[in-house]
Image 1 (cartoon, helix red, strand yellow):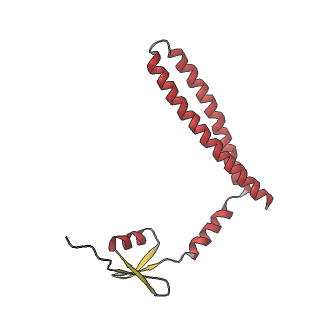
Image 2 (cartoon, rainbow, N blue to C red):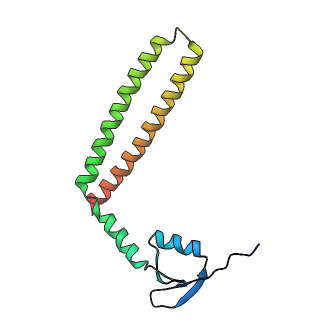
Image 3 (spheres, rainbow, N blue to C red):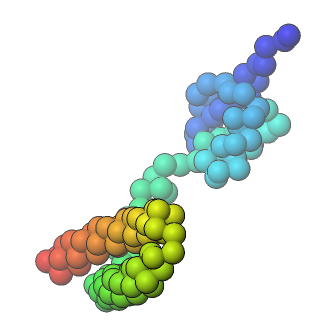
Length: 138
């Protein structure tokens, strides 16, 4: 079995050769936008400075209004979650007299799903509250 060679040259934006890599790895870097082909067996790595600019742009993209809107939607989902869980418990409780063991297990599982969903929504709400407070204090 012949070993696969690192036959693709990797260069930086100034054309300085950095190292060699495998063809499959090079194609993956190009596909993800981290590099582009400059010749059949040479790729140029994309600048990382553009990534930092994009991150900065993303940080300032969310306004106080948008964060407040997200918080409101999460609060509505949490309220909806509580009502749905109460309704589900009531419906399943009325069926418990038929097949207690099976229905009890289903109730436990469904309640667990609702509980985990509520916990996730509460964590998101706390995150948005912190983002809101941070933007408001700027």
